[in-house]
Image (cartoon, rainbow, N blue to C red):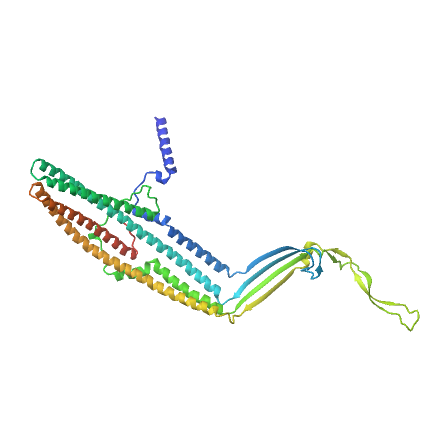
Length: 490
């Protein structure tokens, strides 16, 4: 018994590990809830990935703006050969032999003042960083609303398909009863033909509804970036009763809430603030720029291989610099030479590292650039920045206007859908009674098949209108809830 239990446990563990290792599309497909669709869409939407990259890019820009306040430090090195007659770059003497030379330098500089440009660039980068975060939230909201709309579209088309299939079933039942009446001679055979035509019409409506449902699923898959070939099914939630849903009393109340909550408004406000900083950045070009610079450098020349050793005892030699000619008036007067003494020090090797040490130089200095006339480039930059600031103000007002129009349209659509839902509800109930009476008359042989078909078709259309009004109302009310900061759930 223990061995059997042990083997059974191993089998269960093996199956569990296998399920974990299987790809998701090979595991049992569970229906997707609305929240699962929203989360998946947000994780795989390419536009959201681009917006996330914008945040990363603005973070880099902010970091660079902060680093620009620090001194820079750069090193350079060169190695060159000169052939033929040339000037030794370090001894400034003519040479005809090949000269090998090296140059090494370290430079640094820091901006002391540039019209507060660095400060304003940092602040603008911080604003742009925050605006990009709100931009990502705006895109997420758009993806969420599109997903909710597609989700409700699937549910609506499912109900329409179920309704058309019920119509086909009802027509088949009526066709069966009519066939028996025709065989009994109670009704003419033309009634049977009319019902067969009605059945074909109902089946066509069911096919169209099935195609609409398939198209609704395709739109949802495209939102989720799921291939159409993959199996996909949504979970059908308990939809709220439109009669129990409460609409806001006034769209202005929703609009005021949206101004305080919606990220696109925050993003537009930050873009306006960033544009104002752009004006200050452009105006910094009107001020002097003061920088502190310093450098260290050294060099080596292969032509300067030796150097006098000034620490050793020199050899005194004389150099002839001229002569005095013999006097013609004095017979036998010798030629006298003019010489000067010169100390000659013994030479020693002037090595590579010693040359670098001997040639080591440093300097530090402060420079100031004063703008006087630059073909009005700075002033034109300021004017362009002011235009951009005005654009951002208009963009903010346009964003608010679009939100207000969207809320007003959703409010009006919701109210109209609510009225249509109630009216279609009454219409459906009345047509159901009319169809029931037509079926009774037709079954008794006293009815007209044409009246029955008309009543049935009218009822089918009314039921479809009722479903559309229902889900249109639900979606529009959910949009109004969203603009008030409420979570969309079913």
